[in-house]
Length: 328
Ligand SMILES: Cc1cc2nc3c(=O)[nH]c(=O)nc-3n(C[C@H](O)[C@H](O)[C@H](O)COP(=O)(O)OP(=O)(O)OC[C@H]3O[C@@H](n4cnc5c(N)ncnc54)[C@H](O)[C@@H]3O)c2cc1C
Image 1 (spheres, rainbow, N blue to C red):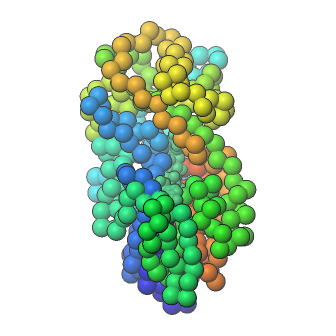
Image 2: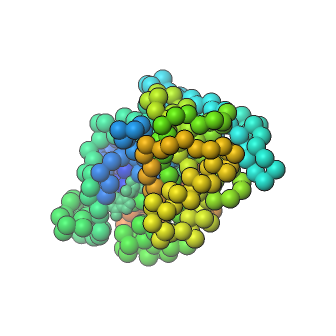
Image 3: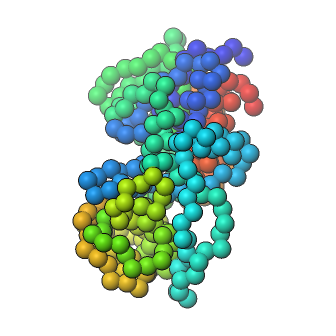
């Protein structure tokens, strides 16, 4: 199989970035397209005058050997750091320090520092939503929401959440059908900055009661500013029941839950912002690695092809790159 000369990658989250980096290292010209203004997809950070917030991926772990080796490189480059918060588990019985001793990593000084560093030498079209992929004799042509065309490309890798991949896969109905089977769960993430520190030893907690799933003192992560910033994430079930609730109301409800969960009166807030993730995480793990229609030169990756974690996205992107290169 000859090496492709040009590959378009749709989606600049960790799966797309991982595929792009492996292909570039193999000598293939890649071009990335993302509908967002920023980078990193669900590994997203929000910068404000009242501090910064990681509103998607909170931290990541590294279990697979290849990913561990990659994370060590990122660590040595100063793009990620380890994070050891005072971690708790909070359930109906109360609050206990967590016994979970995994190594946790975060982008430094914010999550998107990692995606920015990994994309630095890669061509990326931001704010470009790809709406159609068409295979012509000379290769793949991409069309965006404004009617602009890009290409031709030898191969295309679709690296978006499953529901956003489906409309791009009409040329390969078997891939579209596989992506259609995947359920992705929603989530709300509330960023809040407090005027004074909270009266609690908790810096992060897995919550197993009420609407909250995870709470985290964002300022406890390495390299962040000193402002007292917290991120509150809802359970997927609560988010599904509050998909159309106005963001300000969502923020009120989750802040109320924070006070109850920590048994403390909350100080005044200086900033509150609620973000809705329609496709926060896949409902289940899968074992696909990546999907491929090699006869067409069309490939699909994303966390939903393995597991809903940053590591799953990176590994899936790597699977897609190997498939593009004909290395199975
Ligand atoms: C709130 C939240 C908390 C999380 N916490 C953790 C955690 O603590 N640890 C952990 O390991 N994981 C966590 N995750 C999961 C982790 O963020 C994801 O598994 C991972 O980031 C997925 O990467 P991806 O590349 O597969 O998809 P994405 O990051 O979603 O990237 C897909 C990209 O495709 C783009 N796109 C979509 N459609 C188009 C189109 N038509 N044209 C152009 N671009 C398009 C999107 O803009 C996006 O940038 C969390 C996720 C959320 C939402």
